[in-house]
Length: 345
Image (cartoon, rainbow, N blue to C red; front, side, top):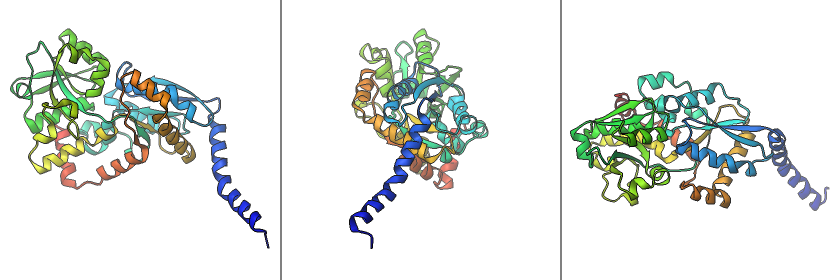
């Protein structure tokens, strides 16, 4: 009979060999290659900032230490990017991107145009994880006279938008449909940098859907110099720092409307999501997810994020998978009401 020590060694070899082989295969593949991280918006905004941060640090945690570069692919609220990842980008682990989180829900509750334009199945893409939770806000420039939500219910406020699929327009439609606001999109802006500049120039009255942490990071003077009035918060849960600012969900009384609103806002849990194309070899997806999680806990990465004013709140790829599966399986009545509200833009 085989000695006990030899049996143990044989078992260990069988258990460890496949894992080591997979790691070696990943390292062999990525060595000398370049990964492209696509951003679904123009440069200078929050999505770009998180992409740049991740790109600067993730290579240290990925076998083979590939070069990582960032490219921008704005358009249609980042549906252009989602379609590219699903249908055009290489399916070998050398491309992934950061779209608007709500784009993952466009095939489910988007407008008819969005659902027709969304050429992807969000549940079949490979979600690597998200780096932030999101509390959208509605703000008005201080010279416009808009100070409270009641003001926005009384007269029309023009806000900047990158297109009908953008989070800005979805949040605005929620406010219009469920709280009687009078928010009007002005389309054609590439991202938050363009929108804030237009607001400062007087071309727009305000900005709907910008995140609270984004404003604090990108435009801290807006608060310190009282240049804007925050008239509503649109998060899944009230933001502790915004006491006294009305919360959308707390103001909705109708149960079905409340359920539909929560579905529309479900993407806020995965506010800065990174996603890879379908059919990427599973060992590379596992490596990318592992590197993503390790980067989010990397002290050097966290220092860089703090320096840039970017909050980090990890939501893992598996958690995104679960969120999407649950959302796409909700009762038809809630989905139908969410579609009705989302499609009214």
